[in-house]
Length: 70
Image 1 (cartoon, rainbow, N blue to C red):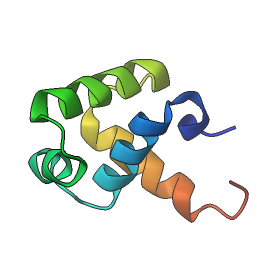
Image 2 (image 1 turned 90 degrees about the vertical axis):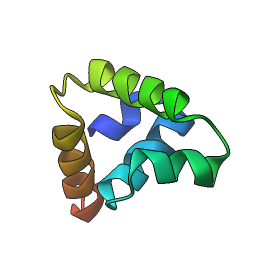
Image 3 (image 1 turned 180 degrees about the horizontal axis):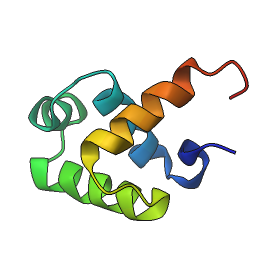
Image 4 (image 1 turned 60 degrees about the vertical axis):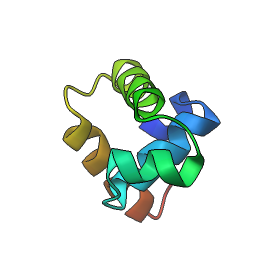
């Protein structure tokens, strides 16, 4: 079971965008939410997954997305 399964739909959406290299400010604009809201979702996703940094969260999500046994 991957880290993405523990996240809400919105957290998954944001983490997927981060894993694609999209900046938080751009994510906020694309989703019509504030940067603070994006930051909140990222912080929540890090807590749920035990990741220490946003970079680690994005890398783990990108690796899982490439895994054939998702």
